[in-house]
Image (cartoon, rainbow over all chains, first blue to last red):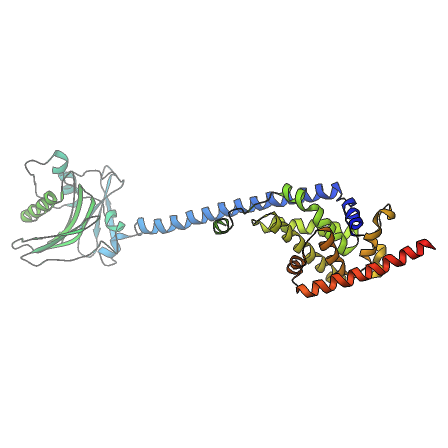
Length: 232
Length: 169
């Protein structure tokens, strides 16, 4: 009897149309699932990119008005020089002058340009052995200040006998103490732009000086700044 | 996934075509045996294979895959019964019809049994599962399966003898 049952069951066949129809539905579902999976991958990647971009932008890009912090929230008047390459800025409160490049190439400012526009007298400093690039000093980029606002902007100081000078590098902080006789100088800001490019912002007699040098090492830059201060 | 492959080095993954090739017969016959209606059996057949696509997993072996298909088929049939409120009874014999009834004598008799007996008979005599395996598939006690099998055989024997008696007359 059971062999007969087995035979009978074996005679029952699954309709081919059912198999084909089912297989078609299965394949359609598989394709849809792959599409959905791919879409999720795309969405996830885009979201990750946006998140990383937003975080990266906030971390890298300077805040809107770096001067605000520096001049205690006071407004700044813009004065544009003839070539249009630089904008000199003066705070309303204490007549400090700043210069800012309009492009990222750090266009040089000659002493004459600065004297003419900012109406301050800068010492003529040169060092034997420096390259021409290294010797060229210029007032530059307040946007550097903005780039590190909140972390690198610190007014610190000084007394009449000594300047504490801190050069912050990418991987370490080097402190250098220099004694400057009789100068009431504040170092507002120092930054290492690269291993051969340095910037420092000084204040003396209500005037501010920002010095940026390229093609020098840290020691040369410090010596230059100290000599600069000595000449003020 | 990797963990499972490490645990079961022979783990297999079936394509849609392979699944249909290997298990369409089993699924269809279990479904037909339970719901006793070709149209419903076909619906259940499709439902089972759609669940297979959704599952996306690997199987430890072909036997494991087959057991999975049977288990899912039974589940789908149970859902079907619940949904349609039509637990199978003997009088539903008319639901299924074959072109040549003489070729399906025993099948008709089996399908006149209660659903819980039908599935045991089918798995035991056609799919050749052991009582222990059927108990695992149906999530029942082995003794329960033995009892159902014995009762089903007894009932079938009575029906078979009655049929022979009628024919002799």
